[in-house]
Image (tube, rainbow, N blue to C red; front, side, top):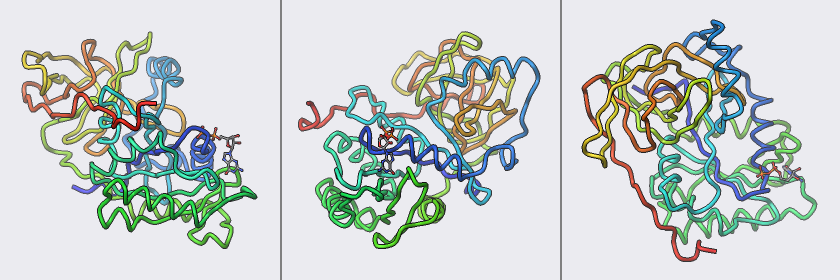
Length: 314
Ligand code: GDP
């Protein structure tokens, strides 16, 4: 089933190219959870409130809404890594925003992450940011990004990526480098049109690859990932297994499920295939584990160790 009410994207950006500013503006201009009751009903007893307060600061991912569609925005490590973190994070999404400063152009540090996104066949939206800079080189930087995509063996479709010119600071976006935008609508529209909606059977047996782990004093270990198949419910029993660790199969109970809302997490009763969630209750959970329906062990493989290319080791 296609989740037309959802888009999952990651942002690839060199430090200082304006990711934080742009995401803040997307949160401001997009709606929030309260106006968009498209996700499961909110659970708000005092226990949840307490838990929520405790884990808000851990949120690395965010979500905003546009035209009734929830857009999960996942943070990527902005550099090469040795532990497969980049792949795991990128596997949660269906497309990326490649954010590039309009003067500096693409930087070598983001090459590795971009390469991984291309290998996963993700669609790319090129965002030339800070277009308000007096020294902006809008057309040249657009060309430099396309050259980089060529070097990284992008597919024809990826080479045909849309280019949006933005000023995160001014909260504007435009498809036309010669004309300033008035708001971020062109960016939101392109995300909805160009990035595929996630797919997955909400009625099948639960399956979720754990992409990252957080920890919090109130609730212990928190597993973060995208639900591949099925539905996860608070209080539900689940099994844990691992494609690469043969003897791992334990059971546990989901104590709380959180989704992203702006910069916070909100507790929800349930979440289904396509959703990116964080949940507590499994004390032994590790990155790379698969969460399954009870005793329906179907581990998802993932690339464990990724070696950065030589040029990235500086
Ligand atoms: P991040 O490191 O990628 O998250 O970048 P930030 O959002 O923190 O921005 C880095 C610097 O660039 C800050 O000094 C911002 O004020 C500045 N900046 C961010 N967006 C824009 C923009 O659209 N135009 C201009 N001129 N400066 C910007």
